Image (cartoon, rainbow, N blue to C red; front, top):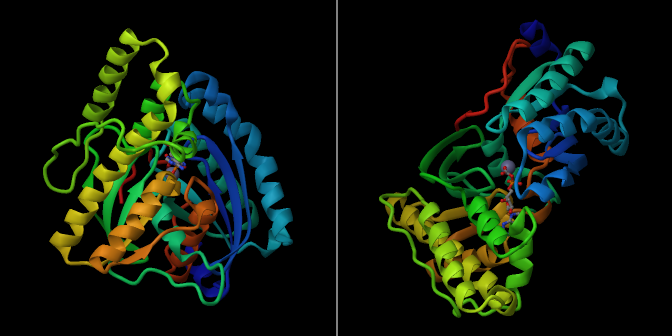
Amino acid sequence: MINQLFLQQKKMPIILAIESSCDETSAAVLSDNKVLSNVISTQEIHSEYGGVVPELASREHQKNIVPVVDKAIKDAGINREDIDAVAFTRGPGLMGALLVGVSFSKSFAQALNIPLIEVNHMEAHILAHFIKKDENQKTPFFPFLCLTVSGGHTQIVRVDSHLKMEVLGKTLDDAAGEAFDKTGLMLGLPYPAGPKMDSTANSGDETKFEFPIPKVKGLDFSFSGFKTAVLYFLQKEVKANPKFIEQNLNDLCASIQFSIVRILLGKLKRAVRETKINTIAIAGGVSANSELRKQLNLLGIKNRLEVFIPEREYTTDNAAMIGIVGYFKYLNNDFCEINIKADPKMRI
Ligand code: KG4
Ligand code: ZN
């Protein structure tokens, strides 16, 4: 089937992309490397549990997937028959959540007799840099180093081409997003705490409280000791003054955020030194963080590095980033078979 499809392949494909790895149900339509629509339905239900509940996530995806895809097609101003391929998140992510997107994509592709493209969610975060917004847009040049920071992953990736990447370092325990979300929860912020910590930190003093920077070998990260240090510190202070958190919320947010950013950029600096690659980028949900964006720019100026920061709308989970990987794979004839399975532990 696939060989025949190669013959029909178009130069400027229209790709439908589906993302369902965690708590966002998203569908996008891309024409070439340009986004025609990008619909994201965020599952609010998890906030009352302080984290994503996998079973609830898959049920929400089941409810949302058809209306989200319908809206993406409508917003793009196309017909189903115009779609040339379906790109979907195969992994990593929650099994039950992935299954919804994978099964939907398979049925959709089969019904229209068009090819399927499997996408690694972490590669997609990185390639979001290549979504075309305007003619003068500068995109990262190869090779570059990408600090990929999300709710489930923290990695330093060497990117040699659109489809060739290697993980140089990763977290040994919690991800940077989890560090934000879990310490935020200790401060009483609702899940996901990252964005709220960011805005609250705005009016805080980042030098007010100091937290330890973990010593981890090479380019790997660790956040669990940091998280425990924050917990013990808060327990001690609240014991002495029950209103401690309330009275110091802005400074606590600023100080915690500052430490997380220091941990992340310390390793990125080391990666630049070791690889001698001087083009750096950030990607993933945490790359929306204003302190990280600010400090990365400063790092670039100080060390004469080319810095690439993604558009905020493509930092947290969205299907447009799945579509851009779909686009590069389409041009490469990189399709998958209909019996493909979700892969919750998929690696770069
Ligand atoms: O990439 P993403 O949307 O989902 C995963 O693939 O995990 O990342 C979600 C993570 C959450 O932990 C959220 O708190 C964090 O990104 N996040 C932020 C900000 N916006 C989202 N963390 C810090 N500052 C932000 N502005
Ligand atoms: Zn993500």
